[in-house]
Length: 203
Image 1 (cartoon, rainbow, N blue to C red):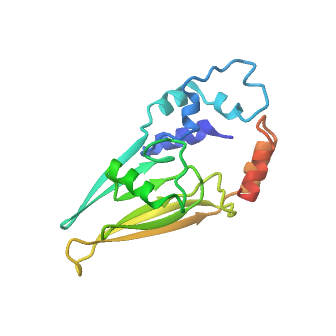
Image 2: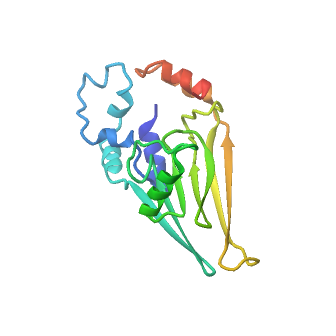
Image 3: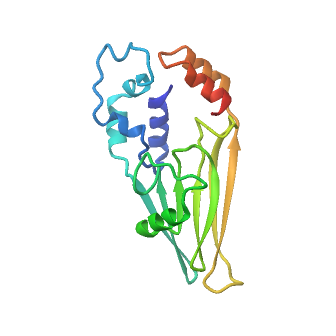
């Protein structure tokens, strides 16, 4: 409902950001006066201003971070859907071997994904080593039955009691916001009213 405000705040704070499947909708979007007054789920894309569209077009598909803790090195990769496709669902029960192959391909020890909007932390044992897959959930459109926003804090610490080992802590945090205000704003806009119910019900 407020895409320009969200983009503006991300840019103001200098938050590192990756492209999601909805961000890519602006790539070949043709906005006309008619599209700005036409009801439908594409309405939110059309109200994004030119500066916001230019910014979305610059977002990377992935972010890769390398951490060195003592004698251990960990690679953390952030993707929207998966490292292969922006709209691929990597769920808590996605085939284990498929996930391992994808993470090896991306050089990821820890993989953050989204897209399903369902938070989880999955640990996969791979030849004596552990791989971690973390879905961060969603701040504005949860689909796990909890209408609060969800985000993740990852803490990495050197574990001195075990040689070449790192302690990994994943904390899911929930934040309350005025869901009804957001839902009502949707109902008073040209967006489909079903989007308001999705916020209220978190599905």
